[in-house]
Length: 282
Ligand code: NAI
Ligand code: 15L
Image (cartoon, protein in one colour):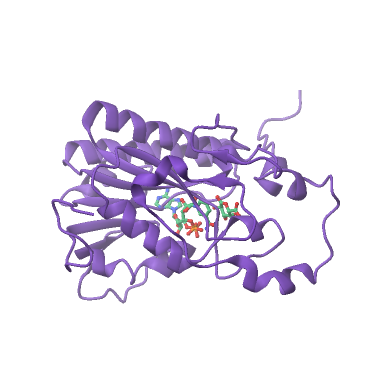
């Protein structure tokens, strides 16, 4: 775990760490827990949504990821980035384009211009959402995005690869399953990841030496899984929690029909959302 900036255990870690999407569900859950990873945390989200109660080691910098100049200013002075910001569900392409596709380009261009060496990219299981739930895949499996949202995360992973191959910026792309306090349905029994496991994966993603561009599936040690993290062995990540503690509660609800997308595809209901056609019918 040696790293030029030291390790989290040594205290301090990075000088300044940027956390985008800090007002979102995961951002709020991890914001105070990533404080130990850097001397200063720059927290960012869209204007008007960030809390005003910044801790002494936090800088609050509102920014729309679609604004290239604003993102350049946001990234200046940061040593590493945890990029959680963007549209996090299936939406019309135009929305995804601004926040996620242009947004991730702006983040990497700013990282290049300001010599940021490490990014953690919040990718998603929806990059491979069209695999069936009876298939087991690893990071080498062909991408099968299940919508524009999954497509934008697939693009983000390719952006990370390009900026590593061309400029040496290292990234861990975490194909997050479902980071919520509890799984919400039977599908999430396989995809759920506890906040504790997520923070530990963040720590490894930020402080493991020489990750190149590593893709890792983000899930807890659930009894049933669709994902094999062999390709991310360099992170030596061992999740500790399991969705099993919620099984009784989840299975108290009636099961979906066996041919329902939520029971067939890894991406669940995302495989059926849209199209969002703003044009009049032809
Ligand atoms: P969220 O929707 O709660 O948070 C995303 C944040 O990004 C929001 O606070 C939103 O205001 C901000 N944002 C949206 N558009 C923006 C823009 N143009 N400029 C700046 N900020 C913008 O999502 P959540 O659940 O916290 O997820 C965080 C990240 O992890 C997202 O990138 C999401 O796609 C990804 N992810 C989350 C999963 C989960 O289980 N929660 C699963 C897979 C991926
Ligand atoms: C995601 O990518 C979404 O951001 C999140 O809201 C969940 O729906 C999650 O995937 C999931 O697949 O459960």
